[in-house]
Amino acid sequence: MLYAEKKKDFDIGGGYKAILFHKIESADDNKYEYILAVHSFETEHIGLFVTSTVNEKGSESAGDSHILGIFPGTGYENLGASNDWGDVNKFRNEAVKVTVERLGITKEQMPGDPSCSSEFPTEH
Image (cartoon, rainbow, N blue to C red; front, side, top):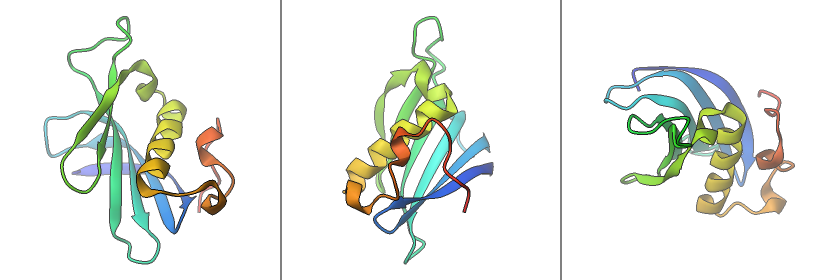
């Protein structure tokens, strides 16, 4: 990332913090709409990135305008295309769900259930 604005940050549970970025300028050719960066409170080490990327081959009329992807530490996984990933709340909710699953965060470890909220949690 060359540049990005932090939209929100919040505790995701299990000792992890999530930071949602938008207005992203990338060093590669991808056009990222949003990035959710997740890191450990203890180590400040980035655990993973979940991304919404503009799908250059897709369209809103076809229902595939954005691609949901994850950088889990090594490599990249395409999790599918949808117009939903261009909507900040829908992206955030799905990105939190993916993160919780990948990091093994239990409901008991979560501060409430941020993945079910239609609004952003309070900024920390």
